[in-house]
Picture 1 (tube, rainbow, N blue to C red):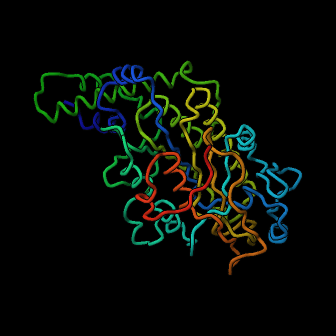
Picture 2: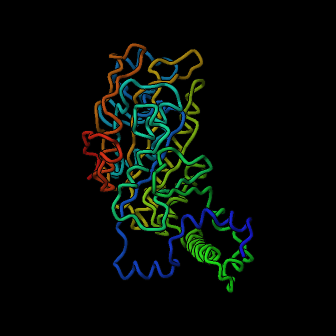
Picture 3: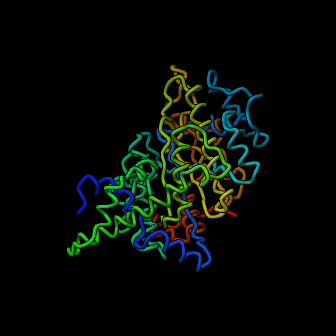
Length: 398
């Protein structure tokens, strides 16, 4: 029988392993002519990203007036049009835009915003403004509960990272799995495999665990083959934590494990002091990881199936503080990446001269409209079941 240690080691793989061995799965899919399911990858920018220095409104007099130390040099900006530009560290994102694989939604927020990290994050993750509903399910979890044709015995969503599973993925009936690294899935020793393959135990529960464990090891074998150099594409990932997580997500997608949503977090955006070098590093890591991930899937012939959503719980104040940083704000940009996007800038950029009562830009796009567009136009899910109301959809996808 399996030891407790072997069972715990294999638990994440068991959660991801379908109910039939990988060889049979691949054979069946080949006979069916391949899989065309659309997948969503969510990247959470934790801490509150300074959207004003991400998508820079350099022509706005308010930017020049409120940003003295934090104003970015105009000759280094990556221009989007005659009034907006990307941060100079986001060359990877600019490359995606020029390839037609990046969409930017400006001024995304919600009514009566909170500047509390946990409250605003829970608002975005649940798609509910009522704080009582922040203890329930997430917008993706609700959406997957209502999704047609989810594969049986497969986790509907997968968190890649060592954070707790986010509220976003919490569902009433759809399972979610979490995974820290490819090594976690490939570290099972042969004694554990032998134990999983042992026969003669007629206990129904033991037999079930045995079958699931064998499928887990078969899945690990498939991932091991994808982890080898010959299983990689020509795309080169940067040596950053976020790029590593997106690389693992790409491997899981190539393995065709059946999950519809993948989730990763990039922390560090709470830039209250000495913002310039820190924010520049974070945006360079984000843009580089996105470029490598999108390029990897495109080379693998999977680019048309995968959409990436990047969001943060709020933006930052327009005015810099005394510590050469910015404090918690409200609205900010959302990024969508991948071959399916309608590239360019969407939505209305908030005017920095027309500020709310305490110097925050007014939101111009409700974040639930972004969600509704993704649910309806990408995942094929009735958005009202996930969002509890109907929100205008945006032309974000081709």
